[in-house]
Image 1 (cartoon, helix red, strand yellow):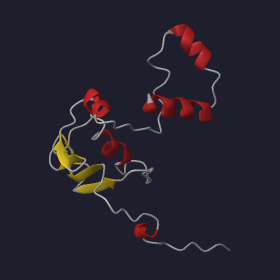
Image 2: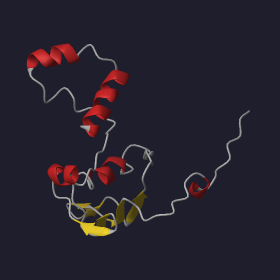
Image 3: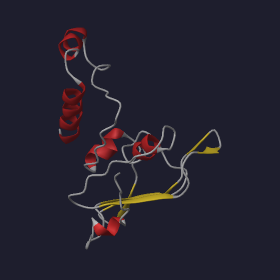
Image 4: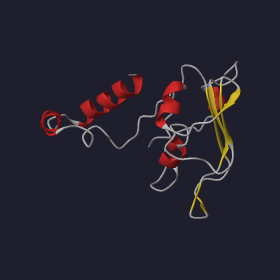
Length: 136
């Protein structure tokens, strides 16, 4: 039998400075349907975040807001304590925002010869390529 204690996040992270990037009260709606309601997240230097939840919980939707794929109908984004607008992937890159998604986007954008070469990569290798893309 294994017991797991639930510790508050402050046990692991005790930020002393303002967040590098903050999502505040994010509420995207699609066709009038609220898919996330007032979600906030502070990102501090040196942190890695891995949203977890069931399918349809809104993890990807939330992450697509700071990378410019989706816009929030309300709420705000801050970088270094100042409000910013992220309307595109180019805006996100300028702010040094990178999101590594669970679904790999490596193959669909490559030419046929490169796709054949990539076809032999395993899941872990594809994930490493996604991480490298985020840092490039």
